[in-house]
Image 1 (cartoon, rainbow, N blue to C red):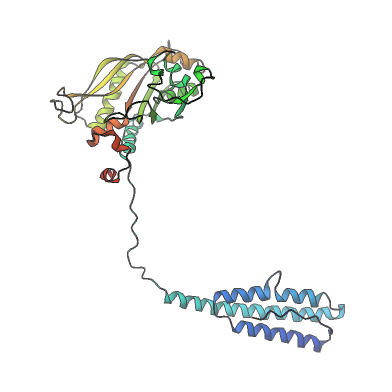
Image 2: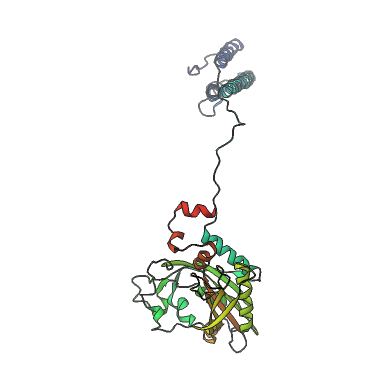
Amino acid sequence: MTNVDIPNLTAFDEAALEQAFAALAKEASDDAAALTNPAAVEAFRLQWLGRKQGRLNEVSARWLKAAPSEAKKSLGQRFNALKKHVEELLEAGAGAGSTWSDSALAAEAIDITLPGTQRLLGAEHPITRTLNEITQVFAALGYSVGGGPEVETDYYNFECMNFPPGHPARDTQDTLVIANQERRPLRDRLLLRTHTSPVQMRTMESQPPPVRIIIPGKVHRNDAQDATHSPIFHQVEGLCVDTNITFSDLKGTLDHAMKALFGSSVKTRFFPSFFPFTEPSADVQISCIFCGGKGCRKCKQSGWIELLGCGMVDPAVFAFAAQKQPAYDPRKISGFAFGMGVERIAMMKYGISEIGQFYAGDMRFLGQFA
């Protein structure tokens, strides 16, 4: 394709203009005859119609601007005719280029009826699946789902949950604390939450009763790793606050939840216990799902398996909430709370004996749940 610059015109009479534009038209036709592929078509377009370095743009700059006024009309008409001629050549060349492209594609055709590459679909991790099952049970009872930060202050993790300073749970042997917090006031020091209970207080501070919420999430404790313990695990806690909430409401709620999770034949029973944030408190046992309550090695021949803790919310906890939400007056409202470990329930449901298998990332183990 030619790259010869456009010469300056020294004469602008009709004969000179006819000769000059005829030479350009022939040059464009010769260039267009060599168009055999899309790349050549694009090069032709830039060579002749480009805004900055196109030959027609150069014709306009050299000839139209330099022409005397009496020759501008004739020169402009010839310029428009040349531009139309170039555009027609470009359109015809584009058709030839597409024909070439189609033939090239035909030569490289593939059989689209062949089966494609199959992509394996992922599956829920057994912890995620169990957590979702628990969430769905309580969502059907009208509970909303809450969440909060895993890095918490001492106030939300301990103080407002009725763990006074000096309580054993605050010991660094039980709690993973953030370094270099000594200069902060005790209640502002940061740690990895040991339960999802802080979200209960954050929820009560942000909205007045009634409240029905469950809080699934990851928690951290400074526990040694063994078959049934891990420094990282998951909890689902629940909170129900309203007027005239009783322990009977708590028992009925958890009995329904255990039947929904493990089958309608499962029985529940409650034993007195102690938790700083509930009073009275209870441990919940369910009849052994492996032996039907008859007694086996997994339930230590007792027929029962301890599964979670619960109780009526301590008035001291409501007193902390009332500092921002006066509606949580312990003389007017009541409520219950409960908490369960997701891994423990997943181990029971799927017959897993080693908690570390959940976190090992072994595809042979995880593939069983796909």
